[in-house]
Amino acid sequence: MDNISWQDIRKVILDFLQQRLANNSNYKSETAKLEKAKEAGDQVAVNEAQQKLAELAKRFDFETWMEDAAIRRISWLIIATHLSKGIHPSSKACNANYNTQIKPNNLNNFVSSSTVNTLPFDASGAAALDIFGVLNQTVKNDITILQLIINNHPAVQDALSDDKNKSVLYLENFNQLLKDNWSDAQASELNKQFFWPNSEETYLSQHENNYRLLIPLHPSALCHLVYQKVQTRFSEENKNARELRRKKDVEHQPYFSFHDLAVVKIGGSNAQNASQLIGSQMGRNFLLPSMPPKLTKTAFPSISNFKESIFAKSLQYYCRYGFKLLFNAVEFPKNTFSVRNNRKEAFFIILTLVLKFARHIQITLPAGWSCDYSLNFKQKLWLDPKRADLEGEEDFKSQYEQGEWLLDLVDQFAFWIQTILKNKFDNIQKQFSDSEYREWRREFSAAVKASQRKREGIF
Image (cartoon, rainbow, N blue to C red; front, top):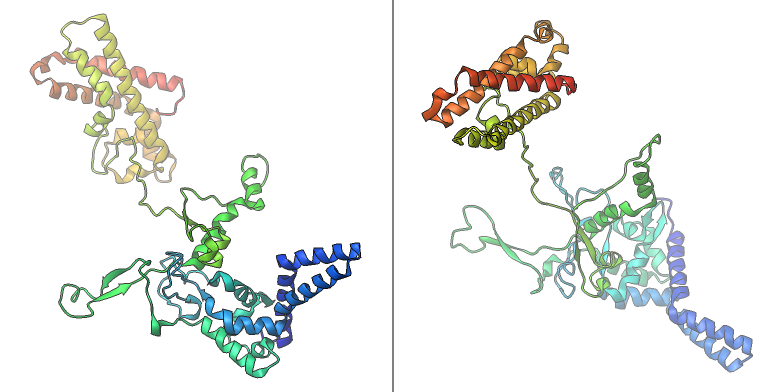
């Protein structure tokens, strides 16, 4: 920054004004008329066009433009980071310039304007935005004239005018643009306002000044950074990275993806009236989802570390449709073919869900999880087979490989079914005899063998 001279700053301003003149629609029109008049040999039209071009050029003369901008039109311009017009485009309330304030150092856990290292300036006042355009020009190494003014760079004053008195006045006026005029704070009926209690002790009291009036401002500078970040999803680099994810045998690159975005329009029909940054976004501001997380409840029952068996009420509820069919079959007075068929269907559903639950536990829980649970040892061997591969689990591995635990598992399943039916049909408990018990054992044993033949990995 020390190697920037007033000549460097002056050149940037002159180049900006020359570009503004070249892009002026009237200047382009008169230039076209001049060329046509020259081709036609119409000297009167040539003189008329040259006169108008000279008048236009005078408007963009350095000293003329600077005096008009820094004395007359500067009062129309607002430079800030938090704008009242972002709440309503017709609001004339005060604004805030966060870049010129002392930054808090205790907001690390919150996303705010202090989160970013460099917060862009925004400006409001459509008829004077060219002044902001000059101040926002880069001189060297991404350093703008506005930053030089904030840092009180000595070269700025001499660059603003050849007349020292004028340059002092211009610089003072530009400095005033960056200051928050809180000594004459103004609100607007178009702004949102709400009262906030100063303390817990005073908000119910009848004392004066027990509330503070808060007037939210639109953080257009921060919102613009968010807008730019979201828009990177449409960049060529991001598109290419997204396409690569669908291809095999190529190096995949990270890419941005934003979901559940909402858009709010600011500034009415002409967003430029609200501010320059809002206008550059065509009034669109992205709202990121700030909803509570959706906690999806798993369809499987949970295993508490104090239960001794998975064959409990929670597993019965998980298999409730199968048990409903089974209960209907038991209640039916006649042992018909359809009743026997429903009974088989009921056991098929119950066994399918039990094995599905077991496989879910085997896959999702880490090896050795059963060490901290109160499950009986036979069920631990079944549901935690990867534990056999851990160090110090030689006894577990030996008993797992012997496979005798499967016989106990068959009995536990049969006892579970028998207990449920006896509790459900208290008046006919005696019907659930040893023969019924053996049938339930056979059903489970058949399911085990079928699963082993299919190599499902459950047993």
